[in-house]
Length: 519
Image 1 (spheres, rainbow, N blue to C red):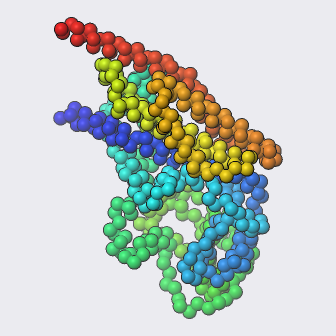
Image 2 (tube, rainbow, N blue to C red):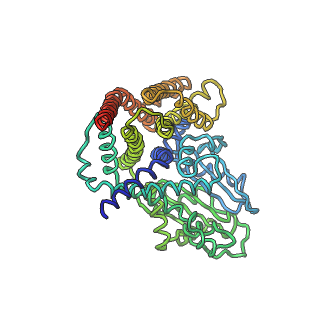
């Protein structure tokens, strides 16, 4: 019974992992890159790196913009410029309920057209709601993939009863054994991370597959749940009169007297320029899993300090904790890079599993007969693994090509067209040349992106601060690291393929001998 159960888990692990493995790889890769979302945003618009951000000036300019353009709004929302995101992002709701948003230069409050042109935001949104699909539908598909990932992890643990023993076994350049060993090692090293990130990803989107409670409690407005889980709902008085608010300098002095001179991240003001104007200043530094940052709340007309509007209930903290663990916003630089490479290990685990499936089926065949299913899996493996990586590099290259040659190529269009082109070309390349060919393409794109970046920065005279600006340099450094890794794989791929080919030839020869002997 025990062996039967393990065999069932092995079958489930292999086939379920294959069917959604390609999709899971794309989610893991874009999710790993999202740990550096703000840095990628800044890399895609390096001219913003030269903006000198001073918090007091940034807050003053944004609040003055609100006064000029949205003085009668129902609420104001400001994300204050900081080192990683050196622009003010503002939102306001009109009396009629309409929402508006702008991105402002923090010193002059000049409107900037950059909100839809950030590479990090594209990868972040692709990670959990894909692209070009209805949001709820896309999130539901991603949730199914996360559930399958959890099944694969649990079935993999059950299947490999000596998983921790196998962790210390890594046989290199041994064909199928090497793929299996690497699959085991990459899976065990970051197993707690995989389980945590998968479960929390499922929990965050619970409202998609358990909507009944929210629909029954909030029948007229389901989104009210998300507002109440974050903030305590106050009873709004109808006796709201127009009144002059404190100015920006006065507000900041009041906040500093209670919170000290710490960086501010979010400012919200409800009912601005009225007797019931409620302002909340939230600190930038967040070292807590539940995102329990310091907050000062006060009446912006009378300067009266008010209780915090944050929901501190157990359910609210649980919700914030699950979200915080998945997003890892509390992670400091060393922990964040460890999480990033844990995500890359997840990509390696999925990739080695897909390649192992293909190689095992190839070795199980005793005849050199064409099998369309295996042929298709080989091409999909290449497209999902290397094709996606090449597409991301081409996507990033568009941020340098467009301004240098005055082109207007859609970055997202280039991303998907490159991905589709990789799939199309793969059908015309023999299997033994498939991976080496696309590794060459990846290496070419990797070095080209770095060269394009240097040329662009030199052309626009951003080259001087570039070498002193780690925020921009690190993305190029990561690209360089993975390009050299691709060179290493390109050099070592032939011995692995040769070993597997010899094993396949021996297996076919042996089967022919056995058949002849039986006759």
